[in-house]
Image (cartoon, rainbow over all chains, first blue to last red; front, side, top):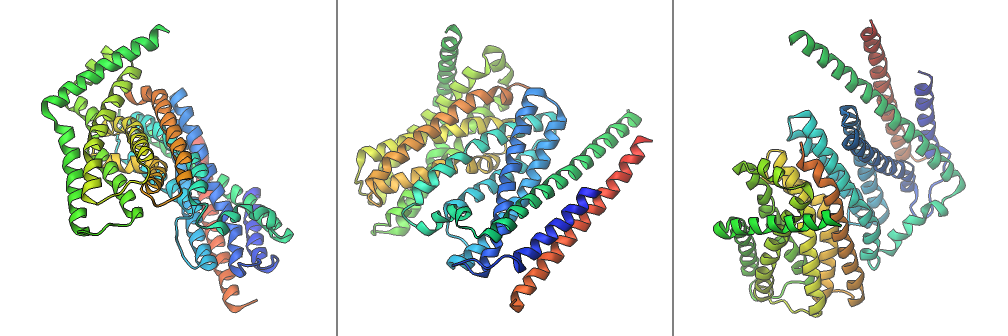
Length: 221
Length: 226
Length: 39
């Protein structure tokens, strides 16, 4: 319980600090505060997906259904954080550049990630058999993630002529005010803790359900 | 050294088999052609005598090729499931040559489609090509890429209950980088962008193809074998 | 601090606390269920 309480207090502090302690950003004004939530959410979304991919690789090699369960949980959590990142990004974009959406390379990458997650779940729902579902979903998770680096490298080349100020956003961590950096890093830590906790809770739940299902099968069989 | 050689021979044999079957019924090809031609004719008619913007026509070409691919490329695996020949195929060859054969088949189908669609596209939409060589290269690499990524996904779909719409859902995020690059390169080749960009786009397409085929070869056995 | 901003701060804080308490409740109920499994 200790760590959970700490996380609760920590994130509350981060939220308060992002409004009261942190100064408003240059050029983006008050809207820039959202960076404290937007960027960590995006990073966690990618991290969760990476974990899902590693779980998938593990499943293909070891054939343990537990790994498939982990992959699914990571995918679900990743989707949640991805949605959060997309929405906060759109809000920020509206405030900073007047439009919710204009296919900036970052927005394209996060959209593709969201679509990969969605496709992953559609695929899973189409296969009733547990082992087959695990195997095919694992292959898809790996294949789909391989395309993400392409976007990270090609998108800047394609769009560089259109929105230079957006590209400079990549340098934001260097242009950040010291106080903002502190809150940002604290938020990142908090988000990671939140992700870990949500993962832990969901994993325990899935394991319990699986154990209960097995027990029920023993009684019936 | 012996094994890859045998794989290539078996792959080619599977390719030939699929081509022969396809030639008899022309089922897949018809599906692709119907979709492509209908779309082209509709758009051309709607635009009338005007010349549409390069941005739009470039995207249109790839929309047609992408959705045609989605309409037809799953067939090569679904047909095996439907006719019950999957087990025979599994016994006859390793997963790798099976993938090779199916990939080559999809490439053939899609390239044949492109050979039909592109001239029609140029004619019906009054396209003027500024960089013909680049244009051909983009169409070739893009088509190869479409087939490359779709083949293994088609295999997954065939094992998952063979619903056609499933292929589109799975393929779109995977193919998006390819589509974006191909569209941008096409746009440049049709005069709408910098000619210098085209080389980097073509390089990206080349690497995309490489990654797609290699990854598919490595992962295919997990899809194919139960 | 502007009125609009304090409103956003309040909403964010309440949302977070809501999520936090929800997760906490889930965690505690899971622990109880796990303890019962042991028996």
